[in-house]
Image (cartoon, rainbow, N blue to C red; front, side):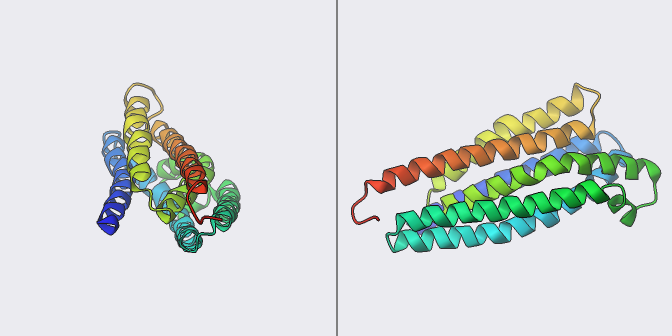
Length: 215
């Protein structure tokens, strides 16, 4: 029962996060082929970062759960903090690369000057995207490590579907920002998710402090 509950919570969290990006592609499609092409170039580059973060995040989940299973609460804290530092360092490295090569990267995909120009702008916003994504990956996996499925589900719904997705729609439809508005909404949702995951994680860990035989 516990495995099913935790697995379901993790699946819903991942589904909601994926749905944010999948549904927002529909909004981009309303803006025409130039915006859609630029969006796909930028999101492909972001996916490289996400998969890197997620590999490190998986290690955080394993370390946190392993120490917690051995009733070593302090080491679970250390594992989470270490993971956060590694993830944010990796995010900063990728952000620097994006800042340096944001004009050259789109040219690997297309020679259309309009697509290249817009994709370059989206990658510039992607600099802010990196630390926000790294933060939410760290603490979502830390919550997985302590088996807090409810925290994952509720927080991801609030951050992605209550805040980020409506913001994507509003900035793309009711302003002149277009695809840029959607990309502004992404780091807002990711950062909110990361902060809420972190608050939930430390609140749950404080509860565990009072559990018997936890050190």
